[in-house]
Image 1: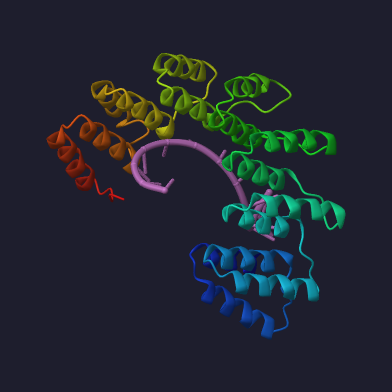
Image 2 (image 1 turned 30 degrees about the vertical axis):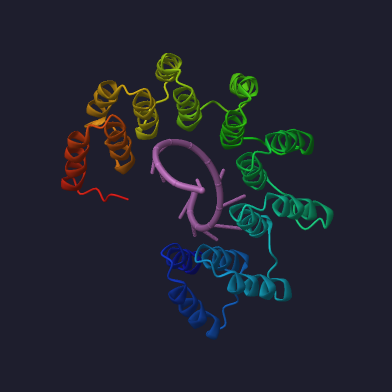
Length: 280
RNA sequence: AGUGGCUGUCCCU
């Protein structure tokens, strides 16, 4: 079972649903009945290819057949609504999981809806779901906090963002590299580079290593202020430690272009290509 | 111990 599901999942992730189905077909012919994991994997695979009808067919086969959709199956459907920008429908399905007592929405399920509400600018609704998690005894993890902190920043609710961040001590999840990067990015976009640098220091002190994303945000912050030389200093420091990526180059190329220093922008563009990075 | 679901950076929207 494990091996078959693993193989099917690999094909799904490679967007090779045809292979997934033919492998499964061979096993079914020899008497194997697909389980919940197999069917859920197929649903996920179809959805990632945008094949909603096929996904629905899998889901209906499940509800008719021997294996039942579980919390992960529902979460994948909820995630699909969220990706379509329909967080209301997502929330409804989450409610239905409770009402029909199908299975309890878990941590990841809540996280997905919270993230989606935040993206839709419904930060207060996200916060109420956050409290609901506590009252239903569902754990919260660092992803929950990261989504909410970003949502608070997006809604310009700085007080909420710092309250949530300050809450992240001992029994609660500790801030990770994403948490700090969200805050560094937000501070940079507000033009508060000094605060961003201060946070970077705290981050290092607490043993969280800044990565490429953290540094990209910082470089972007400098570029937004036209301080391209400072951005370049970070870039040079990144080479050999966390390595630069396409976005690092995009940020700098954009920075030079904004300053109308097109030649330097082109030099970086060519450097990027010579490093084997593909411009997007 | 081993199979399926969630978070951060550029541009555009």
